[in-house]
Image (tube, rainbow, N blue to C red; front, side, top):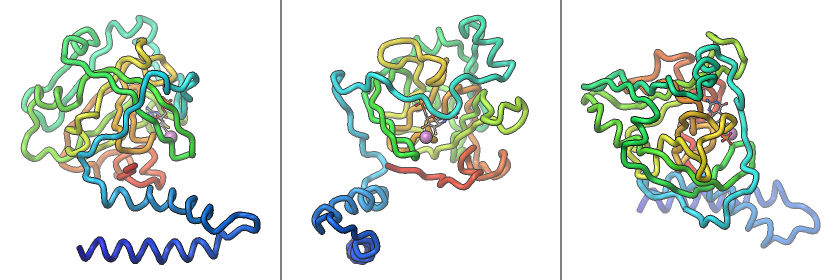
Length: 252
Ligand SMILES: Nc1nc2c(c(=O)[nH]1)N[C@H]1C(S)=C(S)[C@@H](COP(=O)(O)O)O[C@H]1N2
Ligand SMILES: [Mo]
């Protein structure tokens, strides 16, 4: 109750401050308040919505005809190029770290696991959204198969691509906690809009973590590692963009 009262007060204060700061001639107060509400909703709902709530889903008719590709769209790392040249037949998803039974699975093996499809809205921090259908295996299914050790607290997703194009330099990576890893919509997707996942969107395998912003949805997955802490990985902030100042928890 206290937290809610505090939030209501904080939201009202922020709204008033913003209304006066952003007031524009010709824009009604009601319209300004509505626009403000959108921004405030985004910032406050992560505190109010339960972590296990589902992201909204959409109908086939709402799928974006031109889902944008962003960040890396054509990785240049030699290990990735070698796998791509053979249509990812030699690809293995490695799941290791703090697990009882490390896994190494081909795409064909991944496809024998129970799969799931969902049509969701992707929300990039740059301000655009696209709706797409994703098909894959729940991350939780594979984590159960590997058996997380009790010390495991985060799941780190290591990717093939380096945005700087220097191969051994900073490859993309991301991390999520076990609440998101076990969330019913968190998928390792191998298909998009009913077709094999295209290279610009992360072939052969990408993460969908639907309650968070776009940069958490790691494409070009190379390895999944269960860890107790990510402080020792790359810049120590839990992700490529996090190491460059983005928030680790990017809830939407
Ligand atoms: N490996 C990897 N994953 C990534 C990125 C990237 O550059 N490399 N960009 C992120 C960002 S900022 C967004 S918005 C989405 C874009 O996914 P899309 O290309 O399918 O739209 O991928 C995310 N995952
Ligand atoms: Mo993004």
